[in-house]
Image 1 (cartoon, rainbow, N blue to C red):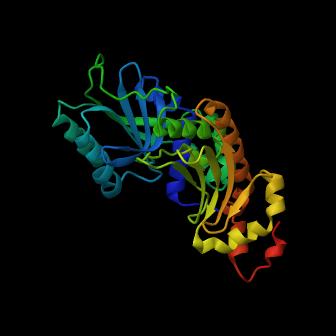
Image 2: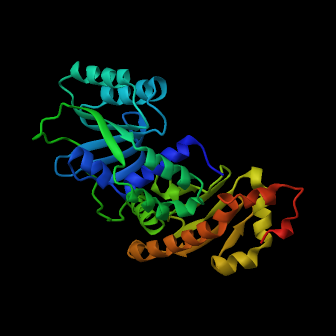
Image 3: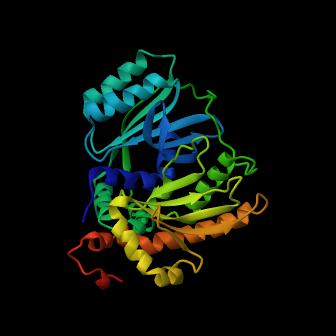
Length: 335
């Protein structure tokens, strides 16, 4: 069954991340450091990237429907223009109202000191049809199926633009380097999130940006329904190992009990070393490490997390967990 419009917009954002040349062809610059749902200027944006050579930020907002004033123009596009002094802003929509574009251009002209290049871009109908098809696919198949959009010659069309950035301008965007020194929890968590995204690209939630909070030693990912999450806990001073696994909220505790009864199956499909935490309704796997073997251990963690995702996704994304949590169903009929 198809999902809502926000999911279809997310699908196209994933496509842009997998094939950044769509954006590069529009702005005429290579991009890197792509992040999805990144917080910029107090707003979460669909797509964020940088051009390393000119130190410029590229911000993209996607919407499947026609341009609107309240949700996008007033609450997203206008605030970001007011909050940044330079960069590329791309607004992608099914169709644009002329007065929305005129309002943005007028705002930019009234602020000539802002080195902002703006583009209004329409998604072409054939692409929207592909997105509708992808919206009905199993979530873990979408990443590989994104390639079908590449069969379309004209994917997007620039219908208006306004350029205020001098061609020789060098910006001040922060270019994050991947030093991998593993001297801080922040460095370890950033490394792990990157490895998980690279190792399990077909898992949609691995692509979304996550804010790393001080003293937080756990990376979490939505499991497909709101009450189930995957996690990866990094080592602490008291515990010198990684812990990877899945957690069930109280509302689906019956599902946790169901899988606990299937312990032998889980040990066969995931790892003989998994263990159950009844108090927190977690199914865990520990991997011992030290700061000298993180790269090797990281590959093992990604492999184990992938096994969790592949085993449980048919229940969460696939909807089989509803059969487990529904007391009128025969639980033993689910395999």
